[in-house]
Image (cartoon, rainbow, N blue to C red):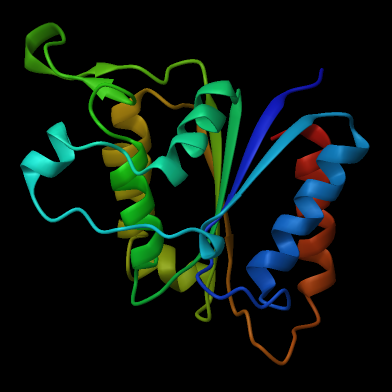
Length: 195
């Protein structure tokens, strides 16, 4: 069954050799081969201003160059986010993007039952793919994957996106790793399946 998929590439470095970019390209290739409809958002190519106040977040306008990203997210049935783990969390560029795009009125609204926000992006699933230098098991076991949990629950979950699956790719080295080809094949297969 074909899906409408938006891929969000959140590596701030445009270098196509970054392993996260290689993996997103493998995913896209698999999804194309399976006939899924795809849209791509590359954050390194966008000017994403920082929000500096609650008032700006609640009442300010989404920058014109990011309105297309909102349309892509609204269009999508499945959202795939690729990013490198930087200082234990997502790069600031991704956080700034999410703050700009997933605003009240679009992603959720206040005034839901029991004081909880009304989730406005229900019906969409997601996958989060994180690359990191440390072993993924260490990130999960010692650091308890705290930034991943925050993204899943406090950001995507708040908007109603789910289920959310994860792929953690550890021990990524710029010089290469013998396991890289296995990861490329795995992401190609996930793209093929639209997962």
